[in-house]
Length: 126
Image (cartoon, rainbow, N blue to C red; front, side, top):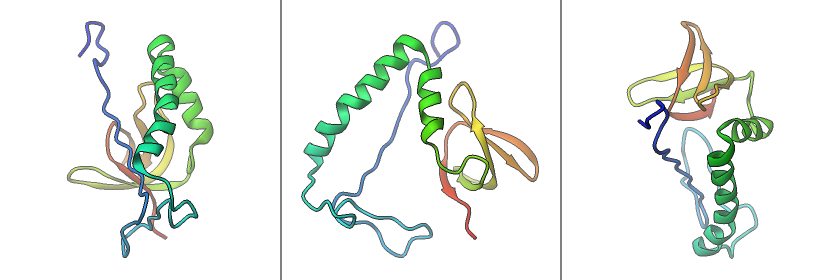
């Protein structure tokens, strides 16, 4: 923890399937090649992505999380809809309410509202 009670760091994981994607999964996956972009290589993708990531990281550092949160929510899919969240030892289904001001997902489930700081998020299965 940082001196003011905030975090010293954030870990962000991003995965992109370039050439192929796993098949027969619970949730469908695709690749850039499957979507009509067969010639993209990892170095080119990283070279294109990194400057945009750096701009947002610098903005977060200068202005705090609020502008990042606002931009994310403008582009978010599924707000107000039922989603599934996989935690280390638990799977939760509930309505995706919001992201709080720290970036945690707010989920309304049958047992009430939960704040989820880390997990895998999917659309709920039909």
